[in-house]
Image (cartoon, rainbow, N blue to C red):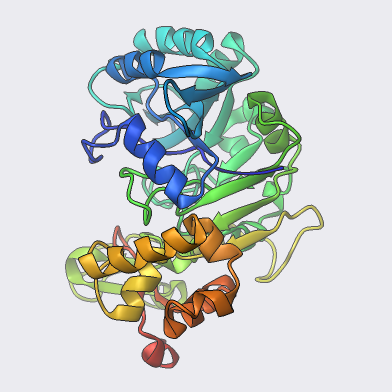
Length: 405
């Protein structure tokens, strides 16, 4: 049985997150999206943890559902931590945690509480090395899964150009064997990661890191698991054994850090152009923010297009709201976009069914041009002007796509 999971998101207790990001909204829009499993996020925050304990009940081993809900998503207890420390240089690494139950969560929080405050942000910050953190989690439970989040983003990814490492082993030392997966992040996809032979033993997972419940954020990246039964251990085993079914990825150019650039100057460029410019912004003469594509090129030991024998499939998809906004020249949150979105959901059940499976001829009865965009989306052929330095990529109107450099 196929289960589509988004295990990296944040609650209303995280900074820069919607204040309506509660369990009810996550459940409502997760079902509309077509998700089967979501992470709770932020279990280290005391107020959120209290809410989780009050509103969730265990349905299967390590799987929780909302109490008194006729239809509920399946929840897994998750958290993200930010490790900020200095060795040979300052490091800033975000790690995603999956936990098998509230008893283990309490032990994690007891450890973290001795290292810093837990009540100020759903994604707390600690002066702990990657190696030390994994060692501490292993002492609590070997069922805890630690996944480097958005592994390539410049400032907080394990491989980030600003503060990152050149390998998992450099970051985690002898504890690297306990890192079974990395999160590709929006600015990279599996094909980019396949260029590094040192990642062949790692599963590549994708999740949204969503800070709101809107369907163009929640589930925009996800991981599908083919399981006989949905349990925490079965999901963890699929990650550790690299037997995930497939991942859902936005085009890397859609991400906020794909290209090199300088947001304040409105300048972006390819890695090749950045090298020609000596990584310097031609407008203000300051250093460019080096994006993910550039960083992959630096660390890659394989040519573009290489595919390892153990590689798992992936699907490149843009959110349905983005396609509707492109088709009707509007914004994703406009009344017109919602009208078309809700009509499609009413006819086809959920967004992933529309994006992945619904017959194009049936979708064309709603709107032929939108159906054509959905077909192109399935083929990964929607052009996107690359994002850079914190700016999302921008979809290009179909008639202008051939002009995009």
